Image 1 (cartoon, rainbow, N blue to C red):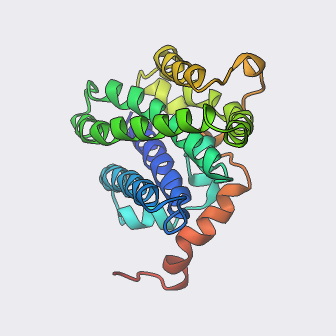
Image 2 (cartoon, rainbow, N blue to C red):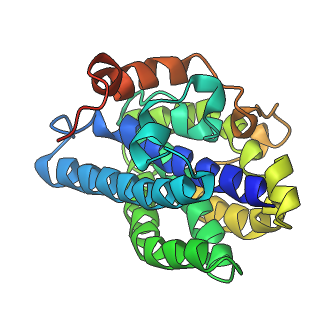
Image 3 (cartoon, rainbow, N blue to C red):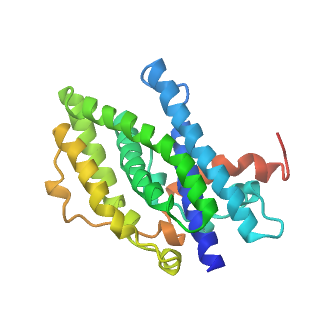
Length: 247
């Protein structure tokens, strides 16, 4: 049970960290100043969530483990983040939709975890849920703006949906450590899909053509796309080049 709890905590931490690292590339490059600040603040929220989770994981792991060693000194196969989090930024439409899909999932997940018998996970989820609620609202408003905007913005969002949807199925497929903890992510799918579909329909997008698409899995078990290697090269460079460096 202890190992399952550690693995699950790392899954949560890794997913938040990797998406935060992805989003950080927009800092200074957002379409307008206000949205540049917004995506940067969301990035900081995600990294803050990952820090809390890594600190707890370090306690569970024991030994010399710290939040820094867990974030900076593990290899690709040791990361358990969902594949959706490591997908490329692409254009603004793809970044927005990736955030929307992930944030809607986090909202359902953290709502469930607020009732978790592990009090530390429950406390982290309770604090993070306030942030995630804003992430859902902000990204959802952008989905509406792009989907029901110009022909160009609509086309870009359709392309983003086609690119990202095949990576959403993994969110609801239980890993061994989730089963060991008695958690069933599939139970979250109905509410998640209802929220996502409602916004997409208002944005004049349809999921009909994607209903039976192939779903990629593996991230939760450490099997990733090549994209994660590039992300970790940037993320881990300083710590690996200068071991033990501190700010």
